[in-house]
Length: 408
Image 1 (cartoon, rainbow, N blue to C red):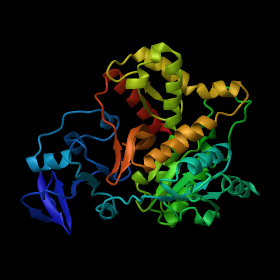
Image 2 (image 1 turned 180 degrees about the horizontal axis):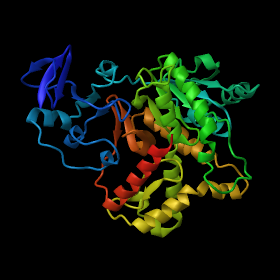
Image 3 (image 1 turned 90 degrees about the vertical axis):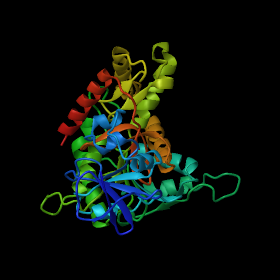
Image 4 (image 1 turned 30 degrees about the vertical axis):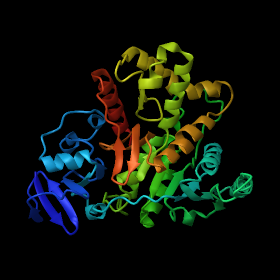
């Protein structure tokens, strides 16, 4: 391992680089580990929480705790103290990543799309988000829809004080990227309740992909620095489309001038985890999930649930996964659209946990796809939970990873 200084930044790398070399790392402050990887094939910056992340290829294996290389004592101590962050030096804008990622105490949220999910999500943010949200901008192109929700929600209030809940304001499309968090809840196609089987989420992909690409390009034009959060289905493929399309020039070439991977997040896995909890409370065979279970993968058919990490049962985990992945169809068979639990569990509650820097379920970029898992957002980037995963579970996760890569 070699040590360098670049301006006010302390660097380390495995290879020789053309920067001022230093003999030792400082005992305080952030250390930046420089690595080299083709841009947009993985995270461009991330917190180094153990030594294995300094050598491991990114992907499913990132979720699995593993032994790492021996490190010099001062670097090992810095990793243990949470002072090391990795930066991809091959990204054309890598120097923008040298400073810690900005995180405000309170953020401005702008929400596009006030359909069933968007409006319900908005209610949750208004009622529960006063500690981390300063205000909420709402946008919908349908006549009187934003006016309705501005009128309704600003009339929900505590007996006092009257400034506890974040105010809701109507904004135009040109204002969507003048804030800290953009919520994409828009959709060009949502199957009605007559659709009671099949992959309802992926049926929406092509039309919604065109729509999310349109707003990703707007984010690029605005040089947007905040979070681009996807709630519309299918969440995880739409996240990937947003990231890639924001980074294409007018000729369609990837140039790295759009959103960074850590700016794009998908909120769909929270409800899958909540549905697993629902079934685990009803069936004692799944009880272990309540204390030791985990949820991974997309909000859709390729979901991966583990009944338990320490006592994994593949057959039981697959049975639970099957029930959860098709819970939306159960609601449709009752004659209703399944949107309330997703809007709160995947949307409002997960987003607020993310903004608070808490562990939650969402999707973030990992090894070229958006992989759902337990993670948290820090000023050093997205930190995924790393656990000693059993081999059978890793195999399932790799299958899901390959399927996500195949969706273009």
